[in-house]
Image (cartoon, rainbow, N blue to C red; front, side):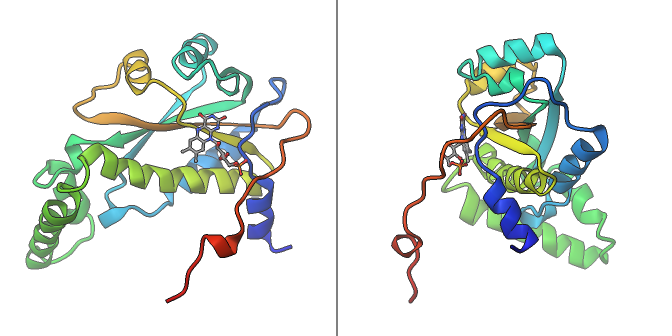
Length: 207
Ligand SMILES: Cc1cc2nc3c(=O)[nH]c(=O)nc-3n(C[C@H](O)[C@H](O)[C@H](O)COP(=O)(O)O)c2cc1C
């Protein structure tokens, strides 16, 4: 099987982690690098990654994540934060991220105008900034999970949480960030449940 398909097939939402196994530091670093290399709209890198390792903090995190055992039994837990204020048009952050492209001033101004126009026409009417940033965070999430699978590491995405509870626990400045999603990484304990999928033909249409 091709390597990518192998990783896709290996990955599943791991419900039961082996608490005795720890991901080697260099492999966890690679998982972070998969997130780092992920694409984002306008290259705004709408994310921040909080790795929650302290056992006491993990235990508290579990309480605000539907008491899911993956939070305490996995090797590593990452809470992905979505940027809010920084990615709004006119911010110093947006300016800085366009500036790093080294474009002539006119081209930079054109990008900034395009960004603001896109935000006004396609983001603001349909969703708030947190929702837009969260979409980008899920791209990083997917790459981390598939990338981890390519290393033989299991994962479980975690949306089952109190957003407010996690933000309070981690003392997040909610003007700047919102909690998008969390993800646990580690090694499966025993057999996993079978994968359930509808027929691909029922989900695809050609026009
Ligand atoms: C964004 C997202 C959030 C999820 N949240 C949870 C969760 O909180 N707890 C859990 O056990 N599974 C969670 N899942 C796992 C899904 O239930 C699972 O991906 C789906 O049933 C398909 O199974 P598979 O991933 O094993 O192929 C989540 C999945 C996604 C994509």
